[in-house]
Length: 612
Image (cartoon, rainbow, N blue to C red; front, side, top):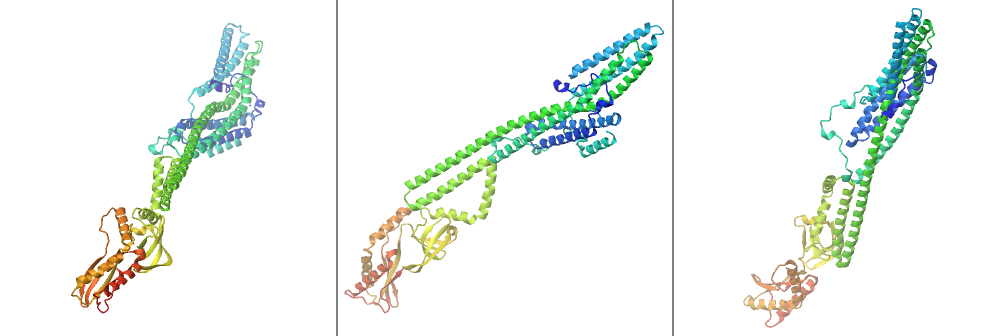
């Protein structure tokens, strides 16, 4: 820091004249002021671009010190405008401790010379005394100038050691006032004077890349890269501002050194001068002192501005390094997230391929294979969506919230589709539908063609009893129809037989018992031809349903009517051969009626058959 301050020392030697200030014009002053204002705005913009808590201290220090730089720039501009109005245009070391020591030594030397003069005056003869008195006055004026130099250096030392915080002609002053009115931030209170935030939620939250998602990491890395570039540009602009300040201070420091040197030269002249000569020199020294005060009033705020800019530049560099560390830390976790996501997706795709291969290798039934493939797609799709959500979103809570909104929206928009998908697993279950089953759905009877994930397709059948034939139309129903009351009927699993009945009415009821036995025996004779098929289907039904029921067989009963005795016979038939079985039953009954003793059927009471 002392090295930074050393370049600002300018109070040690020299004299000043109007021509020494010829390099600085009002255009230079306004240009410097505009550059400082532009620089300050850049600092303020960068300050607002990052909200990381670890950078708040750096931001506050840079922002507060930058505000002081802007204030000092206005102080310098006003002082330079005042100097230009009196002396005309002006143009552009040592460390502060050395400057302080040199100024003190010079003041002590002049004081010692004054003490010697006082001794000489006290011992001098009357003719010599006026010249010595005049010389003493010139030396006293030189001492006053030396004390002004000391005061200026003391002011600079005091400013440099204090904590840094937020400070030609008439036309130039007007321009300065206009710029200050347009940039009212100079008079604004410091950021440190604002009350602390009472709401903890309003404070910036720390960023944790280890728990952030890919989208958040990319956004953060982009922001940090932009901030780093902005700080690099701001650092270069700060360096240019420091260089400009050095150019402005160069001729002023030269003029001050010349003023001090000329003052010493005037005060240390030979003793042979007359009192009038000493009085003239004293007046020149007084003029130099007045000019020194004017010039130091210009150079002091400019030097203070340079003092404040040094820690600002260091703060910007430290801030840039902090952002650089955060940027590389964020990039590292971004690459880790991307690698983990890619590995998870590849693993899921590999698992899907192996699962599909196992299905085609070990599941030979086409229907079951299709069902397993549907289940695989659903599980793999959900797992892929979950992996992508966990990879791109910031945390599990974000995933849960997102999935909650998505689920609510899908449940509302696709409620019928979801219900059909759920119904699909009922339809393909143990007691579900299979291709070829005959079912009745909402009054439409048909043969099952396909059971899809959301729809059921039937080949429509028309007719009565066993005389059912396709119409050529395909009926389509949503699977969710199974949840409707009385919507669907189908044959029990494993059973493909139905019950039919045959009846005959005999006129003589006297021996109805033997007649019943004869007709039942005729039906049993026909039933014996396909009994094994019916019993095999019944056994399959019991095995599939774990239910024990009696084996189906023909049964008969007699009803007494006004026309005679009606013999009713019920018998199971294979649904596929129902019509041919009915024909054989009717033929067997007529054959039995023609045997001795012959059976006499009542009028209109001949054998008839049909669905039971």
